[in-house]
Length: 113
Length: 110
Image (cartoon, rainbow over all chains, first blue to last red; front, side):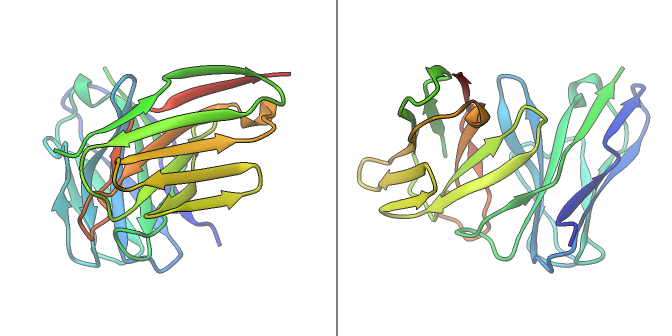
């Protein structure tokens, strides 16, 4: 039982490049979330999903797209990376929404030059 | 707007001391979460509460719904408790959309 895993752990991009971050969970959780963590800003919600095939915007969705084609996977895409997207990205999942424990992945450190 | 404020931002203690971290929030909750982030970066959920008090080992979390305030207490602190402690409010929604405080950096010296 791996819990929540994230791929890759670290990536360096040049401005304008694209990439996809993968989050996978093996706990059969319905809800999945993408957060970013920046110094002085704390964690902020980018996008979330309440089930397979559904996605919704969070607090800071601009510049990101997401997909949830399979229940266990939640993908975060950057179509044209910008230096402002340099951050640590965390994925989390929970069995249900509000009032349920969220399980976090180990994080992906992204540097955009 | 759902806002979450933590205090203090930084806390230094000697091993064995009793520690309190405070969290105030502006919007009524479905659940208030306390999280721990280790120096390596991993985030672990410590507590989730919507009323009263919860205890796990040396950690105690309390919440006062009327005052929109929660506290995290650590009894008999130990250097291994050194971490960032984060509170987060799921607001009144059922989607678990968390709004986070800035975090409290705790350092416990032996």
